[in-house]
Length: 429
Image (cartoon, rainbow, N blue to C red):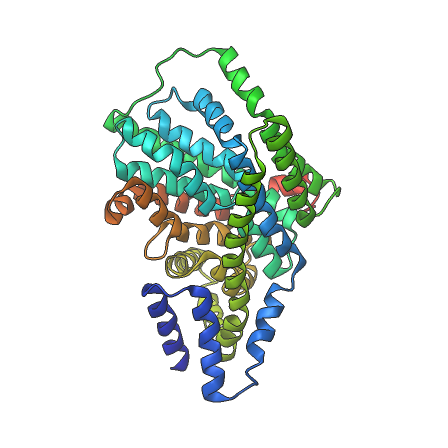
């Protein structure tokens, strides 16, 4: 009964708008104060333990790299390349938005940053071209989730750190699913655009224009390649890769493109500190909250409930996905990855799913929570930029969410989707 009321309190505080990091730290402290089961110092100790993981150093590094590249005019060059590649398809601006998200994901790794950066440029442009505000916001919000799938992914770094998994292996596993969901989003956008007769770029295709756009963006596009093969080749770790990308982003923006000023660098550092502080507060608070749920038997109860379906693969998958989707709707992705991630990974392994498959299903599923009410931060951000009502944006996102659910099913049903590249990279035999 106490478990039930603690979870009800958590959901109530979240729905009332309380910062989830503070809520997750306060509830264990209140429990200890009432029951006196352990010293109150257990709360700060658990918070310290959650943060005392070296791979987490990569998180602010990747955030800073994304900020530097955005301020260094890299985003504009990616926009021009995307325009030349997919702008002539019906609904061209929506396809540009999705492709931009895919390219930006390979440089930043943050769904929230993708929504804010790409949405600020593309949503007003789409509305001006005659796209509905709801469709513009929905396309931008859902495509931003690709930033948590294609490496470097901050969500994958956090999940791998919480479960002592190889970051490089999970980065490799996210490449094909990230590309697949981007293409699925484009198919959904194309069908809607044809039905509503949205615009497309009318100027004739010239190979010279595409080559020029590609050459202007080539340095930016080389960064994720350097990062990935540097990790796979053992030149540097995933954590060190963040520092390498930061340095290269600074050099490209400051000395090659010459658009990055020292004032921009300071602004990027300030934003990175704020975003990192918010993420690390949740990671720290997840430690004592996870301890509390374990002590109350909630996580073990969840594991037992899911395992009762393991004899029926269809029922198990439905229950497994239902837990992920509902949890994603009710709590922050970072908290879900740390608190529920280990339990779900254990359950999936017991049911016969591979560690790599389960990791990608969990990460992609929780990423959906960033675009679903009531706590979907990317959903709120895109709706705010578009100036559209939340319920209309939610309605417009339904076909895209269906595509993402289809991706989750594909990851489970088609093992090579997540195993092929890790095997080529030498992470699996």
